[in-house]
Length: 456
Image (cartoon, rainbow, N blue to C red; front, side, top):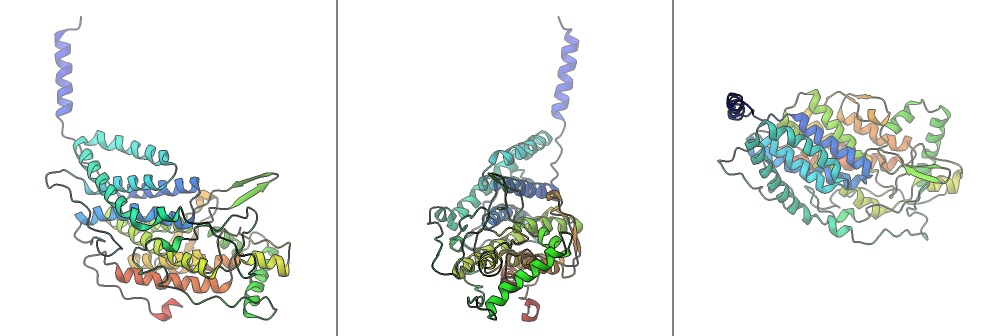
């Protein structure tokens, strides 16, 4: 039988431990970086298309931003600034909500809803929940309740963006009678992805066609025509690069910015996909680098992710609108038919029409958004692709990085010059419109659109 003294002493110690005040839950920018990184990892695993990936980044980023802006007077809500968004619910004044914690919880919950492998986000979330709950149960529960309430609110708004409707629309029909029209390419000959993405509700731009670019040169495979020159230029550049070997700078640039989640590898009778990030994922990685390099706190980091994600989401809507309007055939198809039937591009051709270059448009828009936040001459080392076996590349500005991302498509043999040059301008024009029409910083003066000379 245990001594009453031992029992009493143990009870006293237990009550003393329970009566000790809980520690405040400190949320830093790293928690938001980790949540965004987990979304990227899951999307790479699940093989999300680039347009869909941009949507996955946008809504969680907006949810986190809206909660943060409600608590920080230096930032303005996106209510009335992005299409259809109303003010988020507010917690009761008595509730001990930790706004930063609620923002991360909302980010994780919306991210979980938008991917396939939910358990990968759920496991990550639960590991954090355990730490937070142990540190301060009351603060955690209040913050979780509020974060999930906002996530539910943003999810209801998200439902109105036509995404679900596009899942039931017809597949893209290949026009085999018109030699200028896009055709599936080797090795997997996938059908055209997301042909109805222009029907997704934009965030800031007025419509998918608002930044409709100038058309590509008229299709004409006669030697000497403007279009033939574009095709031949891709072929000549590719041959020059491959003759100099895989160690050439152009090959390094092409591989660094490949960002094609659909790369297929054939071995014997087997075909499998290699894991790569999307263009949007690469630029969200650059956003993380910029935030870390500047020591940005949680609030500024939330702001940066939201602005970059919104610009890129609208850029994909704009670009995909043009892709399936012009429906232009890829270099690989024409070079094999008219010039060299054994030619292969440095990069694998992605499964959608050529014009304009998606990476060029999205990179142009992302670079404008990040320049608006971090400045024109922001030098950084881009280690985004390290985990995929590619070395660090250094840039003197976001604009330089966007220009390199754009030209990488020609080096890779998957785009013509006009798709690259017009594409990056399309993205920059769109990005300038987004930052001019999103007043996210309360004390900031309205941002003027880029001049025409800057867009060239």
